[in-house]
Image 1 (cartoon, rainbow, N blue to C red):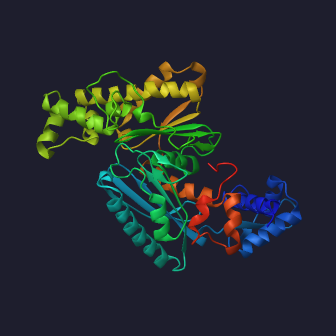
Image 2: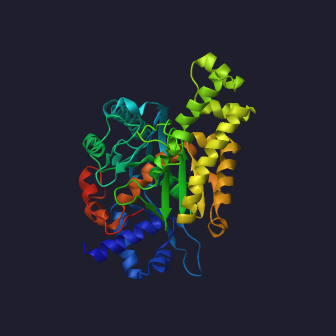
Image 3: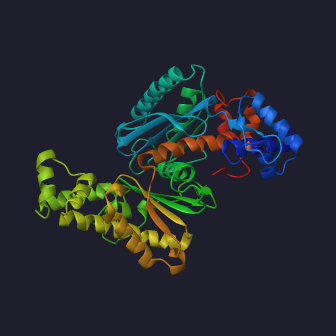
Length: 426
């Protein structure tokens, strides 16, 4: 197929796949393609099993047009979000709808062999269940993974991740591509979370957003002009290791001092909550420490919600520190929407209120005039859904579509990831 042919084929498929157009007349109007070309491309995509005829659409005066549907169940995507303390895996259809999912506690620090072996086991279990319910012939079209550390997107390898001992340079993509015989994309989990919100969450329809994950660590995903901004090597948005203090005694897990994560992340809240319990400044946390032997960020949150003064102060301080840094980003980047997600973000209104106060007080008035700061609507699912959409967007880019559309499926073609794109897809 010529570049013009594949370009028009991809355009027609994208319009139907994203729900932007449902009939041939709508495709022609939105794409600028002639009626004959639209008919040819629709027929070709139908023969390849990517589109199918649906019900009759509304009539504009003549014969009612037949609606078109994307065959989202033609294949599946395996998606996983690996956090510092948990694993979330799922199987989605080609429209990003989650067909099966599972989450369990896990320690990313035990290393890639143990963690990825468990991910593979869970993928196998979920995939077997989906195939048993729907179609035993369902092929794996791609695999998407989000990791809690810097990832070189071009190679799919972690790069000196502070909380992931043993993962530096590990060939995550190569391992999973060989295991499932499918193209694999790997990214930082905050980027997949931002993409999940953009495609299926509270950021749908937005073009300039900032997603901030406040969990064990802190990170940000940036969407500019409707596209995910990864930076030249893939580490854009790593705000958790921006310096917010000059105190040398608080050492971050990355080895530096003064990092935002070391003062306001989940591990920092647990550390400071433990100190408050031991010093007698918080009876509630002291009782938790006596009963369980440990304090978590969730314990600090629960104590604050019960009115514990020390816990309230810890959350407010974390919110102010995060908000002060975000104020700089808001003035510099001027997003329309800031989304706060991650485990610590679910700590009630105190943290969010402190973040908002700092951002609105310290940012430029023009930057905050129409700015919204809100919680994630996808919550724990954002990274999983985003990992699936990362794969879907990459697979249906025109340059890659040209290499697999003739066979009707990219399953069995892990080398697709190496095909360069003229323009990033997200």
